[in-house]
Structures are given as structure tokens and as C-alpha cells.
Image (cartoon, rainbow, N blue to C red; front, side, top):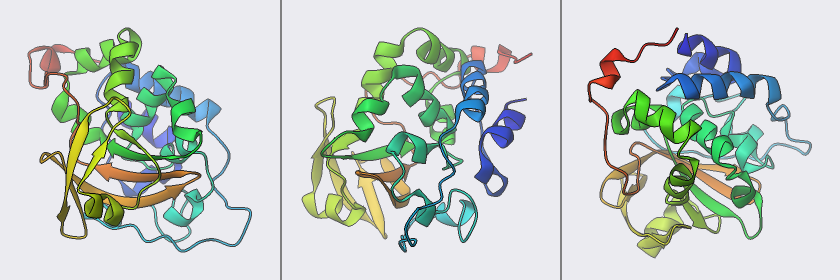
Length: 224
């Protein structure tokens, strides 16, 4: 059922395997299908955007909806909707009302974990609780994935560190053509450009919340 919701809610999902972690994510993704932002078609001639990372070849490209060029100029919260491996992160942004912090001046860098990263971090029940009840806790977690100022991945690496909106200082080192963040997460498709934002897809969830994936409720929780 969750895969069906993902295909309906994300036009670019045919090229990427999307895993939804729980009931709350499925419901939020389904709602996004009804209230999604405008078609990401730039009004001006397209800008050539080069994204880098091991996951990029599985994501929309060329003339497909959600390709990197088409997201230039989109508000960050809307651009997230078109990157098919970020359904959980984007649902969390809407659940917590974080969009206002992603779209204001002077802009931001978003370190967005993939759906698989959330699945590896949280049990289904735990993630549902965060999305539906513990939204203050979830908002603080998301703020640990946002840095002030739209920074290309090369600029992050040159800086050597970055401080998140939650006040956490992250070390940043070079990793192939991307970056390793806090010695635990790697960029897997870096340098998406949105309005006043850079979006770097990463493969691990940052922050201090405990890992609950693999607990018994992961096996017993069934979506009807």
C-alpha cells in the first residue's frame, strides 16, 4: 500500500525505489498528492545543474519531472516533493511546519536523509509517533539537518564544519565528489538547487534521537 501511495504522490518515483516507513508517512504522502505545489517547470531558460553522488543516476534526469534543472527557483519545501527518495523527510517538514524556515532569507543548506535512512533509524511505530504526536521533537531533529546559507557541497567541505539551526556543530570532510557529515553520513546526491537553498541527499539520519529500528514493533506493525 505504501508503494502505491508513493507512486501516486511523486511523479518521478518510477525511477527510484521509495520505501515508506509507517502509516503516518503514507497518509501524509497521499495528502501531498492532492495539495502538491506547482509543476516544477522553470519560467526562464533552464539552468544546467550538476548533481553528484552514487544515487543520482536513480533519480529523475533529462526532461523527467523532478530533474535537477526543473527545481531551480522552486521553494525548498516544494522542491523536496519532487525528489522521490525524500518522501519521509518531506512529510516530516509538513508535519512540523518547518517550511517557513526553509524558504526564508538568507537561505539554507538542507541535509536530507533518504527514506531508507529513516527506515534504518526508526521503527515504524516510533516514526508514526514522531509524525503524529511528537512533532516538537521531530522539528528539532529536522533542524539538525539544516544549515544557514545555501552552500554547495564543495563549499561545505572547504569550510570543514557547519552549525545547524539546532545549534549542533557538524564536521565535514571530503568523500569522493561529495562530503562526509559528522563522520556518519555521506552525501549520495548533492547540489540540488532550489530558491535560496541547496539540497544534499544523505544516507543517514543525524541528530541525537535513539535508534529504534529493528525493535519488535517493526515486525508486528501492519498497515491495513
